[in-house]
Amino acid sequence: MRKVFFYGAISLDGFLATKNDSLQWLFDTDLGGNSSYKEFEKRIDTVVMGNTTYKETQKLMNKTSLFPGKEKIIFSRKNTGRVQEGYYVSREPVSLVKELKSNSGKAIWIAGGGRLFTQLFIADVIDELWIQIAPVILGKGKRLFEEGDFQKRLKLVAEKRMGEFTELHLKRVRIELNKNSD
Image 1 (cartoon, rainbow, N blue to C red):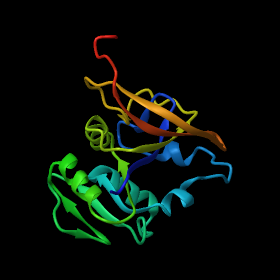
Image 2: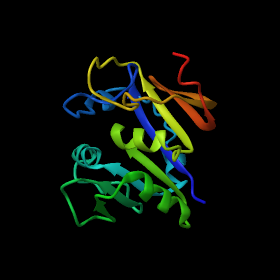
Image 3: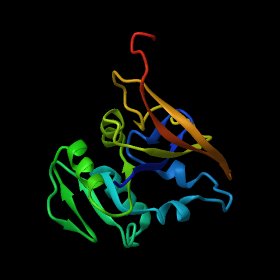
């Protein structure tokens, strides 16, 4: 069975993007020439993301091929059809990712956004997370962990300094925390 990973950066206050979907703050943060992305990318062959994440990443990639050699599955309520090395879907995300997980292949990368990530996280579909935390406060924006009635425990596997970022590698622990213990 394939694994499902999240790999992505957030601000210190937990945002993936500004309220206007901008990621410029991320690209203005220095990696110091040290990134785990190349090693991570070798482990995946499928990238799953929401439509806003796809469009914003396309803008930032400046017409460069987006995740070359990887199948891209983009969730959208409006768009249909194919994109370079991928396609749009409007299915329910949890069932689709579970289906992908049961197929053969390398791991599946959940690249964002927060709504998609949170649905899959609550459903215990995501196995491991690599979260890079930037020393930036956005105040408002698109959260990685959207508000909801859930609590989860994760196991810290490793931490790594990458320039101004701190990366946490976490694994899912299959226990529910007591929801009554606020």
